[in-house]
Length: 185
Ligand SMILES: C[S@@+](CC[C@H](N)C(=O)[O-])C[C@H]1O[C@@H](n2cnc3c(N)ncnc32)[C@H](O)[C@@H]1O
Image (cartoon, rainbow, N blue to C red; front, top):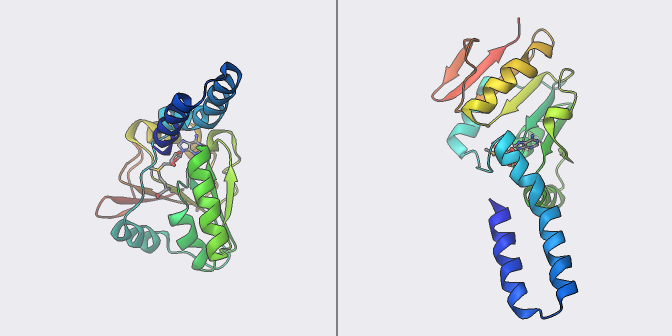
């Protein structure tokens, strides 16, 4: 979503710049900045922020413990993983593949001196199976990919908390409104 803002900024800059070389550089910069976000929107989910009510439900269902390692698959602006970190867990990691959104999450962490780790990267390529809690706010189709590719690799006892979207064949163990908890058996 922030990519749209970047595109508008570059289009405006284009009208002020006469040099073809600088225009080309601006275009390449735009591609570098925008491409990962387009990929994550298509292969994961667009940037949308979890609201406070949902966040409360997610934290309640996650039942966080001091020795938990927690990951947010697509941490957006870092709101959820910041709240998890403030709970006092062992490790709170947010993966984010959109450059502007990643930057916002990093700035948030810097300003609040948070303990969460904000990592730039594609969560499909990360090792998820050693986390105790996995947080998702993705899309219906992405939860199907999650069910096929990540869920089978999770260790026994891992809690998956998904905002809004369910897996297809795996029934949730608990739910609170439209937030779902899955515990790996
Ligand atoms: C709906 S937002 C959720 C943000 C945050 N977890 C929350 O609940 O507020 C989904 C985020 O996942 C990111 N994302 C999607 N696919 C991704 C991928 N493959 N790797 C890393 N981040 C991804 C998007 O860029 C977006 O910021």
